[in-house]
Image 1: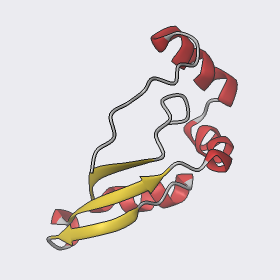
Image 2 (image 1 turned 135 degrees about the vertical axis):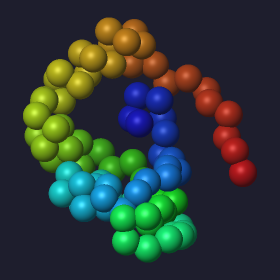
Image 3 (image 1 turned 90 degrees about the vertical axis):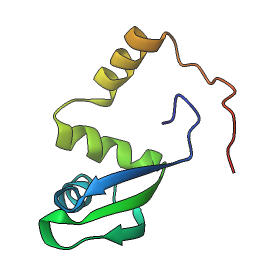
Length: 87
């Protein structure tokens, strides 16, 4: 998110992911939910939190340096493209 200058994003997730997001420290603001139990689906809004990166990478089993290397190999040096803003 940092390298693409994304401050927020919206995603759809099922009930099982709520616990996983909480464990890795990236809990979204839930915008809406439908269904119950295992059939529950939610829409969430995540905010970029740079201070959460060390916890997220540690929980995922890799370092910030490895993440940066992966990004650079995939997309080139840190780019900050002008992305279209949506309403």
